[in-house]
Length: 77
Image 1 (cartoon, rainbow, N blue to C red):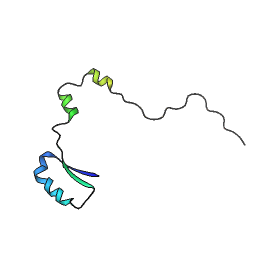
Image 2 (cartoon, helix red, strand yellow):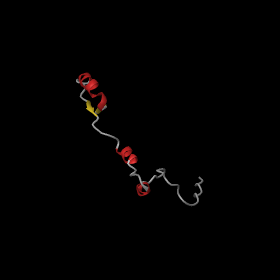
Image 3 (cartoon, helix red, strand yellow):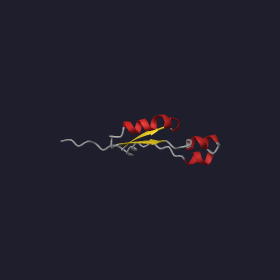
Image 4 (cartoon, helix red, strand yellow):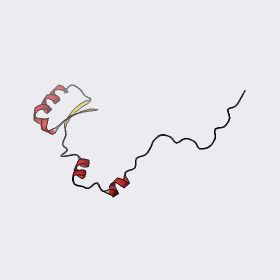
């Protein structure tokens, strides 16, 4: 499924045109973005990002850790 998202300010101008354009496409759905604002930006503006919130965030290295110890000698034929 493909969603063609139309920003709210352009809804009047684009929505009907895009619905008509993709009418024959079964895998395309035209939708209007209904969000009022970005949740994270709203929290940052309000000063809600405090030390406790930053402490909960964990940034990890997803690479596999190397094995500990010495490598075994290779077998010789």
